[in-house]
Length: 263
Image (cartoon, rainbow, N blue to C red):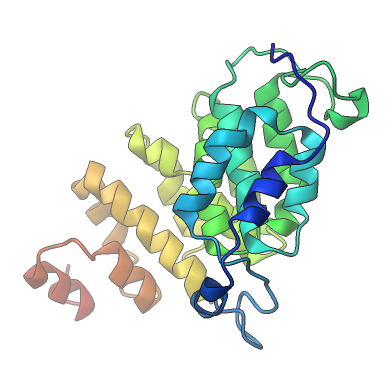
């Protein structure tokens, strides 16, 4: 048990102290915040990811659920990322059977989610705040170290299928496929292929890129399995998805796929 009381949001304060206005314009362009772009209207403090990670490493133990709530709801992209990375740290450092009150007993009880294991609380918090996980980096840096790990030993992974199939946003759908990275890294490829099928003809390039990325990672584990998956599908899948999938294939083989000559 961590025996101290925090009377301010240290995570938020430390992040605000790292703001660098000279970086704001570049980050806004990189994350496509212009009119009609996928990150339209997002605001930035000018904090690069390595700096955010360093702050999180220093502050995660001193962060309450209320602090996470404040940060995840922020207008600033980097504060939302800091909240997600902190959540991942709490999850990672919590044993599978850790008791519910992970933080200091000095926090009011209403700052805690519903009773349950700390990992369950982290997952519940994550799923309750997906509307704020609204760019590709926020998804990709948080979903598989949390949801993927949570479901790794579970026989029921329907949560990810539901996100992919019924997600309210492209970000929820992206969570569905990218979370399978953890399974792939453990040599479990079936869910990646199955969820890729759900998203196979998705019109948005950010989903096509994510599916192609995960298929490529699956192919690193078992190229023959990827080839078997591609054979009846590669000619109809979106070109972006196919290019991402076969990016690491030998050039001659890539050209066969790109020109529709694989049979």
